[in-house]
Image (cartoon, rainbow, N blue to C red; front, top):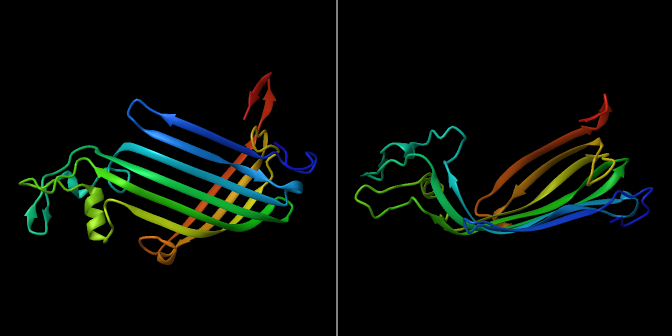
Length: 215
């Protein structure tokens, strides 16, 4: 819907979904962009609640983790873990960013971001076995002093956005650029102090060629 004059205000869009899969995965989400009259403010919303299960492979993308082979863990020889390491967890995600237009299509603003993972079940983990099975998630948590059953990342961000999309839902032309610097301090509830630099860029132009729609 339009929150202002359509001649000067982009359409606002909020989309919600509820998913329940045959693997007992549940995800409820609400995402979208809210544009105030005259595009004076642009607000980015991303909320999610889920209980989920998925296979993990440790950190990185090449599956070259030490848990693939037997290794020494505090004087105890562990068993290797080949292939995927299944996990189940609940997640609450709350992302909200408010941006003020300071020039045509240029916005700056602040955001708040919360990721809370809890009821984490590391299904391959077996510390009571004769040769304990130590997963990547458990090893990383122990080495870096994280609670392996739940953890929180909570922080604020400073954002720069360039957005000249012709439509926030069905875009035919325009560009979107977001640069966000996020800091997650312990005093806001994070397990550890951390920082993150986020970059997103999209350019789209739709046109017709020989009677076909091209992008």
